[in-house]
Length: 638
Image (cartoon, rainbow, N blue to C red; front, side, top):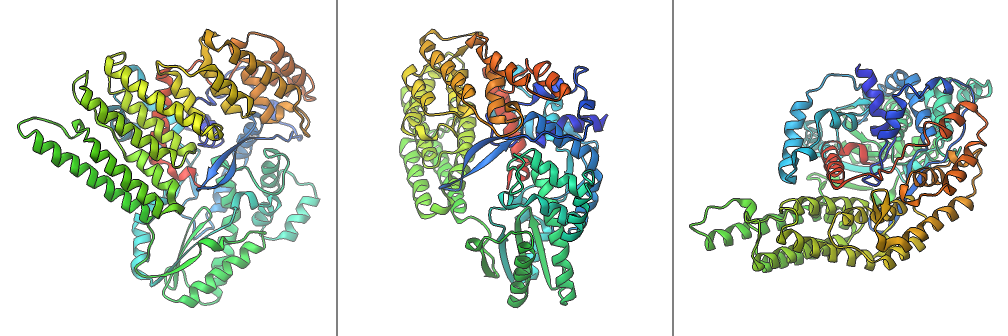
């Protein structure tokens, strides 16, 4: 029973990256796979069709971008079959690492007390979020998206490493410290090198490959990375947890070789040195500068055998006391604490005989202005950490609301000023992560007002104006901040069609196209004011599909075509058969009869984008992601 549950969880926790629309879900796909309409036996063949993942561009740091991937549904099934066949070989191989602090150690089949977890996370967020009964998340629902396929070793997230007893012991025991990381790691992995790592020898790997032993664990690992990623041998898909498990295989072999070299040179682990490896980040401790230099040289040499190299820009040798924390975050925590204290003191002095709770204190305009100025100053002085500072601020800040359902004009002005402060800080670094944090905070804030009350309408109006202005002023960021459109759909005020048409004109991005389509929809039809938007959307979708070119066997195996064709066929307001004909035409070209039946039949009527999502759905999904990220941030670093 537990094994069946872990298979069900696989399509939530192992294949989907965090960086996806709040309304993109594998739930209908999982429901199909668990039904009697789906038969895994159609994949019991030697031939695998290469697939292309859906690629999403997201900001990395302040300037750079990177591609995050959502594997094609066919690729996701191949990934599952790989896990089912080699799960224990993976676990046995990863036992060899003496350095990894985040590696799979067993199948996640242990019985856990989700009620305790619910008390810890769900209760906290439900109270904070002011959720109604129908908006809450059950433990069973959370388990499906919460439990990873594998259980991991002792560090669950990289921030936990800094406070872990073993790490703190190393800080006290050793005099020197150096942090190293691999440059552009996932995109630099040569898939054949995975086979080298498993065999432990490049020549042995080539020998077994030439003998066409494709079902060997080593060869299968090389192959799975290719068939889910354009048949590419340079780089593996970035985003899914699956890729981090695969990467551990390569890094484990490197760990093992480093350990042996250091041991043969008289350096004993836990005596002369200590290494903590979190994915591709290395934390090295020693009492000798020369030993740390030797360890770094050994690491560089071993990485070079796999065409990998260290990121020199982040390599700094430190002598105790070590600087490990982000100084910008420390300054921000201080500014936030001062802000809360100042609010408390001024509120208490002016309301000495008034019974109040801390959450009632909305503050004063000058206090919010002072906070804004301090945060801006912190960002100015810590530009390299701008993203983390903005993200921390958006997650930490809370806007209290007075107990009265209708608030005074004076209080309303303060609340508007508070919202403006938050929006201004957000605009300093707009990306997927800060957008997600902003929308969660705004939803939490709006939920504190009785719906359709005068105060609710006034606040929604102000929030709409701020978000709409941000979208218009930063329309170049719409392809990463598309969830703003989904959030705006549930506010009373509406955007004009001209702006939406402009967004459509300049994008082929699947998530932005879906967000625009969702915004203008009204059940099975659309809001009449957006008829021109629907017309242009229809033209855009058909133009993309009719002119799409791919080099693999079938366009449906290319996710950049598949998700648009598939989900817009299921977008009811379009109400035409043109997209269906394009989809069916491609399905008819599939040479494998079993796959043709799958794509043309049972899979045709499910949608990965939830066109029917309600405001309650949006709140539940936001809450679900916040709960998971609060405890499993470990799964999101690469």
